[in-house]
Length: 182
Image (cartoon, rainbow, N blue to C red):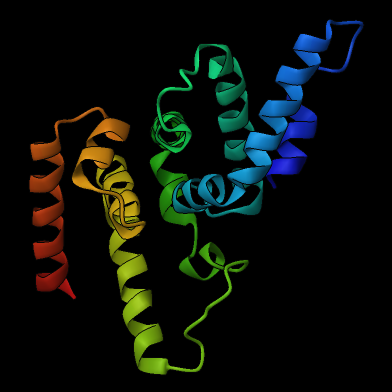
């Protein structure tokens, strides 16, 4: 997905300096290297194939626009998550409520391999967790995605633009809700 997005997103090669070409190549390599990160964000916020492609394209465009201001002293994944999650949250807010409710759950995971297919009980637990996460507001969904990826509260706070303490509190409350509801 990231490769296809990079091909359509990056400006066409024109008579430009080798520095511009190197920047374009570095950006394309960055997208390819972190396609899993981008795929998780896209998959968490868009469930239809066309929506995933549209959201992925928009994330790539925004990453490209922000690329010149990226500070290499900071972790690239934090920078990417912050942009990708902000774009995804904005994208979700722009979708109509009718469209969000119309999408059937069965269509939401048609291209996600189920590593727990051999364990029906574990698979049911994962299914319930996905449903729980799907029902969360966009910011909480982003927080859960980062938490499930084993990011620290500090990293979660940096990505979401909240304090480390706020990230810890929100995570704790969401874990408590999961225990109660699941």
